[in-house]
Image (cartoon, rainbow, N blue to C red; front, side, top):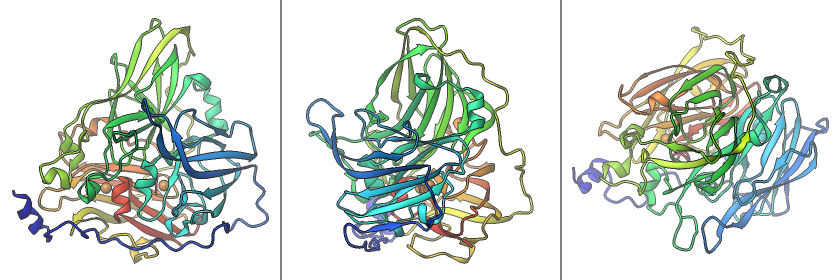
Length: 511
Ligand code: C2O
Ligand code: CU
Ligand code: CU
């Protein structure tokens, strides 16, 4: 099919102005102003820190430093290990919280444009959830008050301003947020040096070592932005020295649009013990692990007995590009420089001559969801994912700041089944979409349809609590969610950040 013909079929002669979502961000108040959440005077924080987003320089490549945007933290009250700065990384501090803590964060915006922070995976009041309507301007401060009610697990934080999330995250704004609790402590998982924190991202650099974003214009945006270099926690293909023992590897896919199909070299298994919302009921052992943007995994790795100087690689192994879908670029016969599915070396673990932690993987992991069960009587809502009129749509709609449809209104604490149906647009254009729901974690009930041969499916772990689920081309994925008990306005969206920014996002209201 010729390009021009295709554009005509799509109802367009040029791409300019094709993206309809041009709402301006809500105008922020005067500089120096503070906005606070509604916790009230009774809220006495156990932990308080400031988090400032500002330009900064890091050296990523030999030569000129890379100008990035970075979160920096400063602890006011709370345990000394609450904030851990990652040296030489553009990532924000690792935030370590404990279940039950009351937390106050003072977010200061020094970016020169609007922003707001979202705590991905945490169940917090809507005033603390980082909805784009709450964005603050340069020089302003936003005060978050919330109680950590989530289970121990690997969560994260990133900006969520209207139409600028992809650009701000690509520029460096993101960080890990780790929650611990007594049940997890009781397991005595490998910790300290034996706990590896790995934020998987990709970036594109120009000749002067600066991040490139949206170089390919709107076509590239519709596909999702893919870098051509892989980074782990801000380092290009790092090598880390580790002991020859057990490790707990916490993985976050913090990429804008890249899907990883992860595997260890030397045929070591992926022993997955945790997902988005903490530990699974029992370990899942498989060859590969599919991790889509926004998703996390907790993995155990046994390096016991490896001689000093042995290299173990974490790779994203090859899969057919079409298994992640055919976006606009694919339809036009083009591709990103390093498309989804291209093999990528992520990092290398090099053993030193020191025996490490000894650990025994338990058959069952502590779980708080003994009471969880499928609810066949729950109301089922169908949510199609589709491309029409040059827009990615969610439930047939596009994002509008305050709009909520009738079927997007749910009662606090009520249980629903949402059925994500990934549809082709009839011309074969379809992509895998990682769908994220704010607030409470959900369970995946089942996954049907799609191509039986899709190479990504074997790596998907649907067990346990999730807040982001990958829906492959042609698939229907049903999730059961019990909504947050906080009333207010929350979001659900595709976590390909360019899809989110272009409007593949909607509000839901908890009443
Ligand atoms: Cu991690 Cu609404 O996003
Ligand atoms: Cu989120
Ligand atoms: Cu998407």
